[in-house]
Image (cartoon, rainbow, N blue to C red; front, side, top):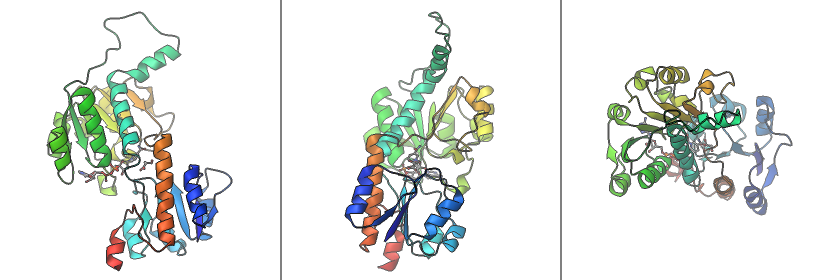
Length: 327
Ligand SMILES: NC(=O)c1ccc[n+]([C@@H]2O[C@H](COP(=O)([O-])OP(=O)(O)OC[C@H]3O[C@@H](n4cnc5c(N)ncnc54)[C@H](O)[C@@H]3O)[C@@H](O)[C@H]2O)c1
Ligand SMILES: O=C(O)[C@H](O)CO
């Protein structure tokens, strides 16, 4: 079985695949063009796909009928047409859990950075403008006892809620497709409607998995209903927010600030005016960028392909329904 790895991953994943006797191809240079990526897909059997710039849609599957399985190096699978994969019986592996702590750390970090205006103050220091001790300037807000609203309380949302409860004794409210007994019992989290979530949150943190029908759900009409002191945090997918509307809400002081690990579009243009705002902190999609999480992702992605090569179920699969259908 020939494995095309779209970008170098931590060694643990490569070793596992090699030890399992799989033939690996890793392109010599990074940042493949679409043409290069497609031609490598055509000459291999399975893909270990890093990042979300390559889309596995109907056209892809039509052009590459040789592809038998895809192991994503991510938990998110919004760049894959799962229905199409299902129709062709192609398992799509993903990497849940191993990155939940790291990604929720970044949501927590963004929440605090914005609340305490860390990015703005760092810019001041870098530009030689340390300034005098000023009782009235660059004041942040404390998070103790405030309300954290979680949109999408799954694995990462739960970790964010837990940290915020322990660190700041925040009241947790959440909106999810289903209720979480664990969050309600362990954290005293309260299930609310979407409208209640946006109206009551002092910090609104997005942790849902993205689907096209949720495109720009967080837009002008939502920002207008949020609290003036609210902090908007998005570590899920940039497609969830309308960035122009977010910019307007921030400049018009409809909300207090925003922390983004994902942007719309992504990558963000360096001319995007949102980058010039003092109440914003933007990171370049580094949620899972820790040694521990990235190694865990490499191990899981390799294990998914090894299981596939042995005709076994992938241990972490985004479309497990194909197995129940076939059994
Ligand atoms: N910034 C990063 O580097 C990074 C890293 C990892 C994951 N992510 C993103 O985080 C997402 C969440 O990961 P996870 O492991 O917590 O996933 P998960 O499946 O455990 O949790 C997502 C939750 O969102 C809920 N949800 C989805 N749409 C909803 C809606 N419209 N209304 C209410 N609830 C909704 C689901 O029911 C689920 O409980 C991933 O899909 C990915 O896009 C980003
Ligand atoms: O979905 C994911 O896993 C991230 O966005 C990439 O680490």
